[in-house]
Image (cartoon, rainbow, N blue to C red):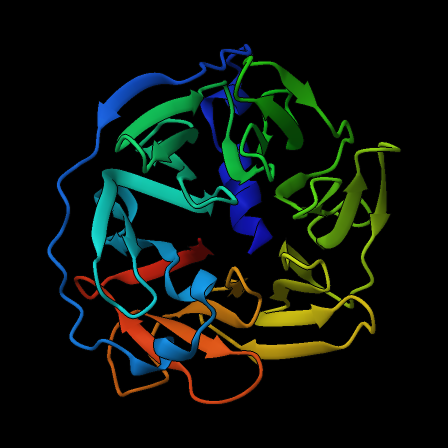
Length: 326
């Protein structure tokens, strides 16, 4: 939940007395794509044949974790929605957080945190199979989200002491701080029209996060009506629905009516994420709840009703933060 994000934000060298300096490196640290992993999916799911083309031909990115503490190994994969063509994108001893696709599906941003280091934001480009370091400031840099044109990137950082939201221009390297509150502002996520973004804040009550929407035109925020603990929001491409973490439940809200549907308690305090069409969701589970699979799984579920199916883990590890791109 957001407490994990807050702990990651504050337990860094920058919060322990190192002077924060804005050392954001544009497209630096270029490295080649690691070798692809052979496809090990046992089942090609026939129900994907009925998906909209944008979903069926999209890619799902997710993180698989093995071990714990100093022995933690995290691997970033992408896979087709039918469970085929699993590819390893990155791996390290430490943590990989919150992958996010660009709107056109050509770029993937994510955070990496090696042991005893700050989280940094990287960008994987599918067009040239390169991984580049793009945010390397002091403090914790997390929760990247692409603007619709792919030229700007929202993210949260503790470079100023508190966790605030920043906007990075990927063309010029210019960085603008958007929130300046003494509370915790994290998990920004762009609206598809680029006019606003949703994010998580505990500004009303510390440790009790709520959801807000920031309007670029007027530079103001408004709360999103939720009850209790709410975090990690994502808007559908048509702007009509919101996927988020409702307490311990992965949930979907209709913004027109306020109706909330709780989809599942994943056992991982993680939300669901919408497919490009908005007709399906994906969420991780510690133990699969469909098809009798064991170990971590990704569950794909149609919102209109019908059967769900699961994509199993690569090595029996814990699966986290799936996101579905074009």
